[in-house]
Structures are given as structure tokens and as C-alpha cells.
Amino acid sequence: MNVRRLLIAGLLVFGWPQIGSEAPKWLHARGMPPIAAADSFPVPLIDGEGLYGRRQNTAPAAHVAAGIASGAVVPASGAVVVAIGMSNAQIEFEAFRRVSRTDAVLVNAACWGCTTERWNESGDRGWNLARRKVANAGLQPSDVDVVWVKMARQRHIAARTEDFEAILGTIRTEWPNVRQVFVSDRIYAGWIERVPRAYSSGEPQGGWAAGPAVRQFVLNHLGEQDPFVDWGPYLWDDAAGWPRSLFEDDGTHVNAQGAAKVGARLAQFFSSSPATEWYR
Image (cartoon, rainbow, N blue to C red; front, side, top):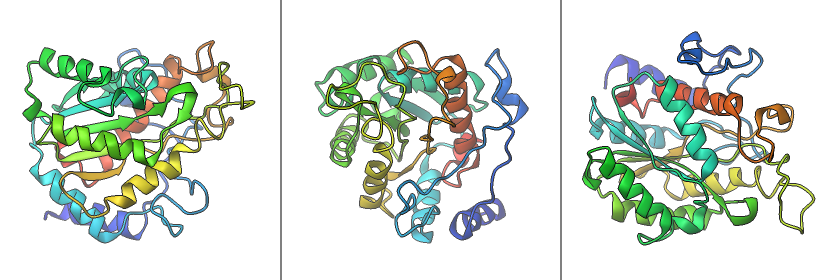
């Protein structure tokens, strides 16, 4: 293990310093809207139990080591990263692709209307589209190395842990050589206008609730390498962090500014995680 990896692993185990409030200037390149200076990259405690339980926002040492080991197997150049999920994931990953500086191959297989119910089994709509996207990129299923997952259920409800487990099983079937799976929660859902009749808003069922579900999914696979399962960037924040101005008229889909915000967080995550040396 080189010195850089040791230093990064130590930071994750013993505490990562607060990231500066201003996003790197290169994230504003290629016509993407600028990220507000007040937009930092927080790692909240979710419900008080942290990203890894027991009020811990840093991964256990054994899990960090598993991530580094899994990343070492991913090709150092030309790694294939595929995004799967619903419409917001599609919009946000596209923003990430536009600002990303890497020789990794980034395939956006997230799709409109592709809620968890479209990803459970190989014959579902999401997987049919994902196979086509991978093939259109000139790739084989065996070429996929890394998957970014961001999901929601129908009627704007947050995905459950069991949804992620079902999807992981299909990932293993569809892309047998996947080494890493990173999962992000949902952004704020309180502006959603078309919500289930039983709720007065999309929160907490539509946004915040995804955090504990992702956490349990990660804890279910702590320390595993086949594939390595971990958090991607944590995305939820309250209405102050996700104001109405970052959304389209429907209150559901992010606009260009909102997409740029998530794209920046994805770029920051992949460029700093000790598990993703292949991205640099």
C-alpha cells in the first residue's frame, strides 16, 4: 500500500476534516452552473446514529481496507462505471459526467420512470435499458467494474433496504465482474407536488427515509469485497440546503443548478475516496 493510500485510510478511520465550503473551480467548467459558496459537502448524522451506526460517520478500519482492496482490482485506467436508478439519478449523473476529469468510462443507465420495481429482476425495464446502454458504449457485461445506485420506489417513496438487496443480487447476475457498488440516498423531497394522498409532503417518506435504508444495506455487507458495498455521497439535506430554486416546476426533478450540486458531490466523492484510486 502506498503512502497516499495509508494517509487517506487513516483520515477515514480517525476522522475526515471538514471540506471547504467552496467547490473546486474546475467543477464550474463546461457550462455547468456555479455551485454556491455556501454549499459544502456535509456528512450528517442522519437520525443520530451516523452513516455506519453507533454515531459513527467514518467507516470501520476493516471496511476501509476492504474498499482499498476492491479498488486495487478495478483497472487503474479505463474503469467502467455505470449509474442505475430513476430520473433524478439520470439527470445528476449526466451533470457529473460533464465535469468529471477521469479516463474511466462513465455510462449513464439511470432512466425516467425506473423506480426500484424496474430493477429487481433481469427482465425488468431498467435492466433492459441498462444492457442497451452498456452495449451502445461498445462494452460487454463483463466489462462493468463499478456501479453507482440511487433509487426510489413508486409514488415518491424512499427505497427500502430490501429493495437494495434485491437490486444487488441482479447486479451480480447482470455484471459478474463488478467490484464496487456505491449507493447514495435521496435529496430533499419536500417540494414534490404530486405526492401520495396519505401524505401532506414528500418528507420524510420520500427523501430522508432513504438514509437509514442505505445505512442498513451497507452494514449488511460491511467488510465484503465481492463486491464491495458502501455509501456514495450522502445527499439529503433539509429545505435550507435544497431550496425550491434547485428544482423544476414539479418540485421533483432537479434543474441545472440542482444537478450541478449533485454532480459536484459525486466528483468530490470519487476523487477523494481511498477505494477509488482508479478514478484519479
